[in-house]
Length: 106
Image (cartoon, rainbow, N blue to C red; front, side, top):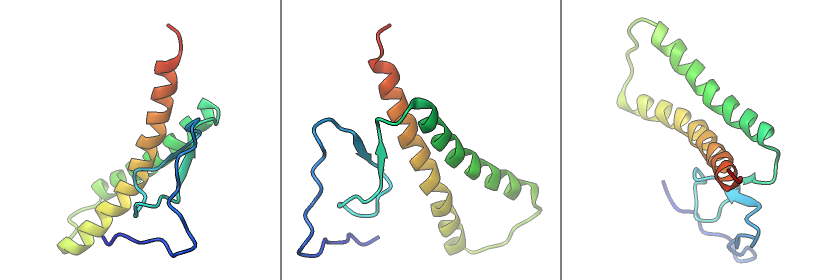
């Protein structure tokens, strides 16, 4: 994957000191455009992670129920990428929830 360079009027985003917005690890360049709002309530974050992870699980379960599937390595690579993106996003959201839980007093 090629690394995109920002056009001259754009500057690299500097994270805000309160770390409110966390860049998704799945951004395709070194200038992120997709973020998680870490101040969103935990139940909303959990719903977002749950939706992404369960969607991929459903696709993979449907694939498993099929008989023999013949395809070339390029199609498998594209399919893996299709599954990786929402899984990584869901894991990023779970990381935010985990950080929040670890910061809570015991």
